[in-house]
Image (spheres, one colour):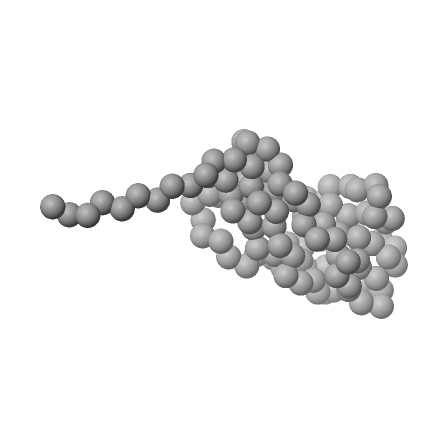
Length: 115
C-alpha cells in the first residue's frame, strides 16, 4: 500500500514581511526589496507605510500576494517621496487578521539605515 503524506498549514494571521533592502533610483523614488512571511493559509495583502517622524504613518500602496505563489524576493517601487528623513515599514493582512509590523527602515538623503 502506498504511503500517504499530509502537510498541515496553520490557519491564522500572516507573519510580517521582511525588508531585505532599499535602493534610491531617482530623486524621489525608492525600490524596496522584501520577502513575505508565512501567509496563514490565505491570500494576503502587503501594506507599505511611510512616516516623516516615526509616529504618524501613511499607507502608500498595497500589494496582493496569492497563497499559491511560492515565497520569493519581491520588489515594490515607492514614488513621490518628499523630505530628507523618512521612515518605512511593511505589514501583511489576510482574512484572519494583521501581522506584526516589519522592522522600520530610515530613509535619509545621506543613505538608508535599518532602525
